[in-house]
Image (cartoon, rainbow, N blue to C red; front, side, top):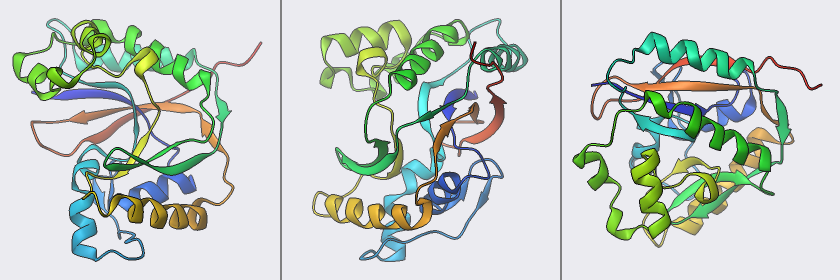
Amino acid sequence: MARYAIYYAPERASLLWRFGSSVLGADPESGQTVPQIVPDGFLPDDWQSFTASPRRYGFHATLKAPFELAPGKTEQDLFAAFRAFAGRQIAFSAPALEPVLYGDYVTLQEKTPDPRLQALAGLCVREFDAFRAPLSDKDRARRKPQGLSAREREHLENWGYPYVFEDFVFHMTLAGPLPENRGQDASTALSAAYDKAVKDEDFSVRSLSIFVEPGPGEPFKLALRAPFVAKAS
């Protein structure tokens, strides 16, 4: 059964989109592989392996984690509600990003957290929860609830994902999981590559996307971009 996720994905023409897709070696919008950036100090085969997990999900930041559709809900229903939701949002520029080591992953995170991103993520979690099927036992086990805090377990039960609201961290995964002795090397090398490729491009949030996993284990595909069209009053 297909799963759907609400993600932030950079605009297709942006340097950020090109950079992220090139680091992962795949473009989730076209569904095609792209020439992969291999950071200094890494072998191509090793880097291909270190990016296998984030490559399957596509370059993105999670706002509403993957979910199966609730009984009685259709893809058309979700897409229509999503377009309407995006149409009510106002585009904004957010603080610059930087590659950081986040556990055993390297991710792009804001240099200074922006409350507008936090609020947008919370809106997505709430607004689209009616479309989410209840967690299966398999889904629940995959989140390893024994390692979560009490609040994260509560979020998992109520919203299908532990890292929401006050536990949300905006991040775009570039690589991982990485061996313990390579994490800092990857972070340093990706920081240099990011500075070279993205430079001083404005980090803007002008749209959201729905990514679809057609079947278990298949690559996620960017199925719909919906622009923000509301204007500040």
